[in-house]
Image (cartoon, rainbow, N blue to C red; front, side, top):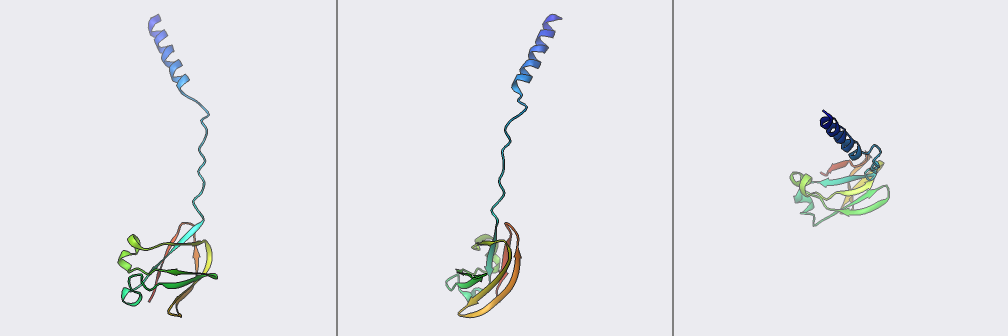
Length: 115
């Protein structure tokens, strides 16, 4: 009887020693505050990305490649922009082909369909 009692006390002691009540909690920082734009359109108009479009997002201008709709999710190049309400203007050969005010959330991917 004493042997079983000693054995059970030893097991309880081992369990308590193995536990620690206050492990440090890992802090996870939030994801980047960035939204993404993907430009989709017919390749007969824009080529296979060989003729980029000029994109103006609230005064910041950059060139972007256009992909066909079927490959937008796999091969589309995502362009990171700041979140919030953004005025997006897309020009091709000097003409405005898309202009819209968008509200972009964090980590959102907005697909812009070009004519």
